[in-house]
Image (cartoon, rainbow, N blue to C red; front, top):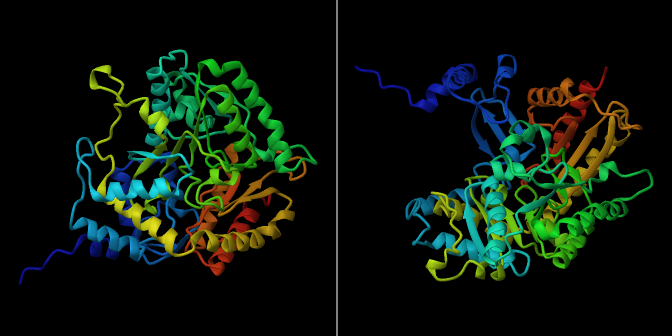
Length: 463
């Protein structure tokens, strides 16, 4: 009797992690990775996920303390999102959005307009966060061009900012690790000192420091507003920039200044939107409406790549004219408004609506703050900072002088490797250990996450 071949999943299960890793390294090039590291730093192949946990091909589990690069909100294999996608699969997987439409994208757009800051009434879809930033940058530039103001060709950004890695998004960011190599390819921008409260002087609180730092932005706008299309920033948390944080007052001051000088405000909430900072959108904490709101990551609950830029009717009308005028915004992606992505996003919004997520997160954030508090006196912990469900621990050679460890020492990598051994997925940013867990995490899992991080910090700083 002829033997039936094993199914791929069963074959992988039987072979375990090592063979799967070998196959991977023969054909893949991984993101944000020096591939030579994997000669000694093993990849972790994941077979499945449930809730806040991932599981490899040998049955070892890992608590996903960073939401798989900040995208997962309500756990892996969430049954409600699964069911929504299953239903959509039976109806429509995708149709182009040029000249066509479909139910899921219309419903999602209506829901986003309903919950977004007031005045944002139009949705333009793309595939990922970088693409959303490209859309907002191009749309702002094109708006001024359609209005007849061809002087406006530049953008103002903050130091230490990150907005993605396509060329336009990279240009308006400022993290050297990502930007320096490609600098000859990038447009010239105006960079203003970040309100980053880690740099505040002794005796200053977050608000007073933030207000002082706004003088740099005000000066830049006064000097450059005639040539500036927009200011772009990450509200409250510069995530890829070592999770540096600032006070919401900066947003309200910036909104007033942009209005005064006739400059757009682009809020990149790709990482901080959908409850990460304690409110559904970070801009809510300042009571402002940006001219462009960029969303992605948590938009689909971590299921599928989808992004959206929300803007208002005043900007929309600047593109609305007879075809021969050539004022239309000609930006597209093949998978714009993908039906499966939109349906996953709708299911994600249903969970926010039905389950009191923001209120529950406040309790989880408070537990996280309390659990991490004991690290505040560690001789190599310079600061513990938090906005909502994002908590960061800054390591330093000397906590009093805040002298930094050299990046070449890769202290955070020690934390990462220890955490994997203990069944927790942490991925420090340089010398910053941070937590950005799914909202389904339990207090007991938070305790585990922080206990393991504390052990890793001790190992990384014990010399």
